[in-house]
Image 1 (tube, helix red, strand yellow):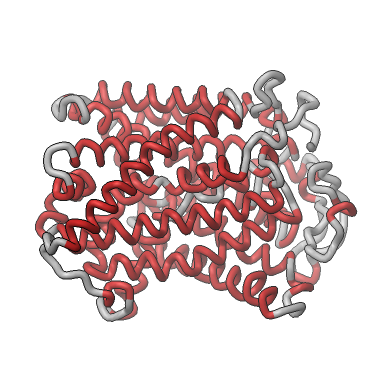
Image 2 (tube, rainbow, N blue to C red):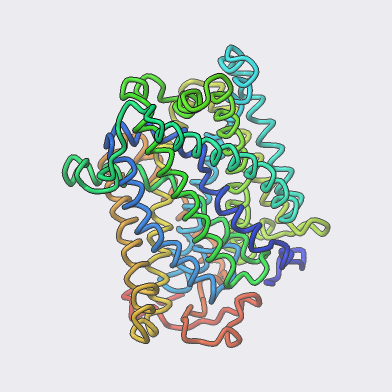
Length: 495
């Protein structure tokens, strides 16, 4: 492992392949994503929701392949932060890591209050309207997950297995129940295979709107890459686990979107946007179904709070280790082998923002705009990582058809799609959301230039190239040498 300020690294070989798959699924938060976004997706494209999820999954898989291939040649807790920096340019690499840190921090703040509200709603719906109590409950969940992440990767995996395991059992059970209901003819709309085609989109603009919304169902699976230094056989496992995880959540997303199309009327969907899964659960299993589905959403929110904490703290750890952020962030706890300084800092910042956002109405509005702007940060670092994979494997693309398709064409398609999502977001978001999204990205320029001027070795990288032997440039050791490799990309080399 690379050296840290404590002389220790993250503990290797803690997570099994199964643990990593569970993390990938939890990162995409199937129940939370369905609850938060399905009504918006149906409102935008109607019955074409399943098709939007399908056609978004195709380029998203290109990004998954890109992460997997890059992880084979550079095992790094910073993931895109390291890969983009060593292939495209260190400035772009730093902004990739910064984009993840900003997006994850915003999401943790914005996701904690719903977790508190839904938890209280399971006992008494009136309690969920108590802002102070909901804030305290959400903060309690956040602190619990913070403690779990601080306790190490093994504890995180065990907690995730319980939380996400119960969530998935509920979702699979209700998915099967929905199929039974549909088979018995209980739906309000007959199922149509055309829902997976193009016929129900309102032209090109409708297709663009649907895939733009669908893109953010999937975000979070890349936690497997941030855990790569702690994963057994990580060069193979992290990418494969992400691929399996995205496949599983895709099946759940499409199944439940079809169930919504068949079992609920457009009026019900519009009237119950905030608790759509509860209404669907009640339709599938009258009596207990609604509360069980709410429980699944609560568990999903808690699970994704944990994986988001892992992503942001491992990214900050990698930055601190490389001295592109304060070196203390690269400190590893001697007992738990976790980046405890990064965890404490993130926890403190998130709690301050969390309390402020829910105590003051104006701040709450700002947080709503910030949450809407998360797509900008996500699309940026996914798009750059897809392009980085093509550059890293550029010398191998003509070796075979599979190398060209899996190493070049598909990741490039994913990258182009993400940059299109980034551009489309700029035309659809409010002015405040755009200002927050771009402003938070630009804020990263300050530490980037500061630590560049201080001579961080990150800005003198050994270029990442798939044709080089792993032994010649072992990422675990993290050798970095000054090499003038960026001239061919038209980028400055005077570091």
